[in-house]
Length: 258
Image (cartoon, one colour):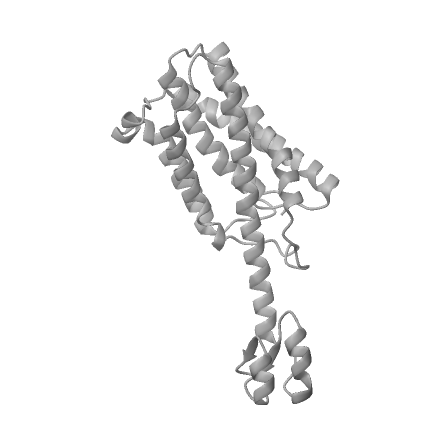
């Protein structure tokens, strides 16, 4: 920071040079940011918003990598173990589209105060650790749904099997988004933005209704009975509990979450 001639070398060599509108011309020319008013609060607000943006960006990336990795594992195992695909390509695309609509509200999400206390750095290793830790956990519960449908409910029709997993994936991913978005206990210690809550509830309802619509019929989905909806929510609830336990283990091991 500087406003005089002697400050220009520092402003030039710094990562971010900051000057004011009343500074000498050479200082303003070499600065990256020029404050129109002599008020440093704007810098504080800028740093805070930048850290919030970074935190929400990391939420999205970690969610996407872990859930997609887990789903890929589930598709591979299901394709080998089942006499049909656990989900067709078009069904997978529609499911991902609905889930992505839910993630589009993350830029508006609230950020825990602890996260913005210190600057964060983008780390590929952190993403890999998170993906390999949380991804297989979601895949395990996909396989639990597969096993329950095949051995307990005796589902042998491909369309019904695919529909149940389609709806389960949407519900579990949107609920799991609230587990991942904070290092705290969601809904109790940390609340998401209203837009995130609204989109999650709306898309969960859509994910359960789509199989009964003409769009669902076009992509090969069929209406599902209430017992299967109860299965979807029961497995999702158990997943949330174990995901919370896994989150504590992860934080203890790696010393971070988002």
